[in-house]
Length: 97
Image 1 (tube, rainbow, N blue to C red):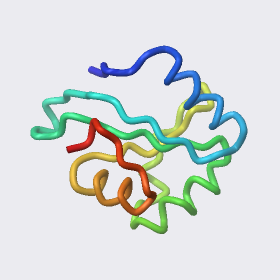
Image 2 (tube, helix red, strand yellow):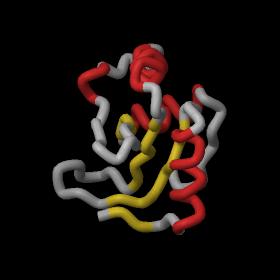
Image 3 (cartoon, rainbow, N blue to C red):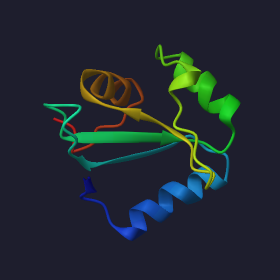
């Protein structure tokens, strides 16, 4: 279950993806499969090769991309990896503790 974002934030993320940029969206998220994780960061890009290349820098595998029919394919970042990548990207999101 996702919560903690508004329609404007979601649209801004989609707009960046539509422009071919690497786009980040962090929101609260609860899933019993991932105990202890309270947030997720979705990192998307319309250009899947560019997204895969970006992910490779951080040890993410191309197979981990969540392929979406709507064009908003993305990596899901959780836990310590989420913190590490956001820090290395210079993104200091208040949702990620």
